[in-house]
Length: 318
Image: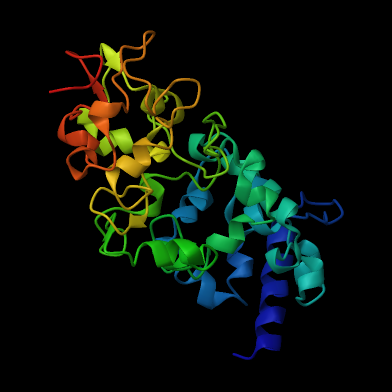
């Protein structure tokens, strides 16, 4: 059947449906919502596979108004579209919508979904990334989440520097499929408080207790500890570690351990270099007995093994 014939069949079906809704002796109404069965006459390639789509359930939900049901739940009333014989100007075409309009349309149903609750304030939305930039309702590459591409490829499309980091000798195994980007990040926005490390801008996911996503896997670092390492508790894991990939086995920001430690223990305000034992914290910092030029002292964690926190020693010793 040609496209023109399909359109006329759709119009015929629509006319019959409208006539059936008219009580005897009354003028035929002009409804705006016509139902998904009419859409199928022209868009069979979409509706034929739609029963496998996560949005299919909206067609069968009982007691839902027309504007939340089937094709018209997303594309709006189709009466004018059918009456005009098709055309993107007579229907809500997502290709023609602005990012804000796309998000408004999707949130008409998804506004109460917790992972998306903060999407209007997310870094993605502020960069004009819309739902359809990542998701494809009709031609999804993955049935889960209806992603337009495999998740890693989708994220790498914009975050090219991150792709390079995952090619480092030591990295989290995202490319291997062990974990995914969304295990640590919430692309729809996060409620985590912004910090010096830019937590909110990085869309870092948080646990139910407000802790960093790292602690979901690295549970031995969670604590609470009797003696906290302030850098860990206040600024978080990214004070010392690079999350995606690095040239050293512990994903440290610098090649060797002591250079990471010296970022804070640098002598400023008597905290660090040649300071001896800090009277307020009891932390033994660099002194003549801790000469960092001596290779014996260049791996701080040889002695300070509980660097993430300790229940036995304020200096994080064994």
